[in-house]
Image (cartoon, rainbow, N blue to C red):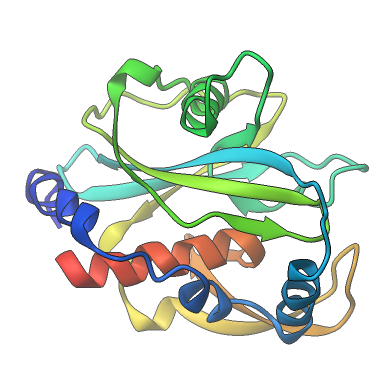
Length: 214
């Protein structure tokens, strides 16, 4: 879809009820569903993080959104995975929206003043890292190239909206991770990358909302 048309239609999601957990669980493996159920019964005092689902026009004027491949870090359970730009809440951040904007600036070079926040999305608890993640949907009206933070970002993953909305990007893959082995995981196949876990759960909510307004 042309970005000009997309930017006119997307504000309509402000009037929609968020599907929240119903959309998240569509992309949750069975073991994660059980973890989330147990997490509700315990006070985890989770760390907070803000991430940005950033939509923008490519050189041809078509709509894309940005994901990043995180660099590998031995002590990070989410390293070498595809996710949204973002990171943990810092003391200087006034709120989680400011966290998402600051981290997006640091990781891919987009200044907060250039991002139009459309709305916050449903928060999501991630048991392996004990983070509660707050995603935001934003528009970046420029085609200026991104500047990845070389210490954190291994690659930019610029996904075509039209491709993301096709059913064939959904599949199930058997994976082994640092905290689970040989598990069947619902995932998206985007730009050749398998996108699963928390990112796929947040993408599931975004996809459901987009189906309502596009």
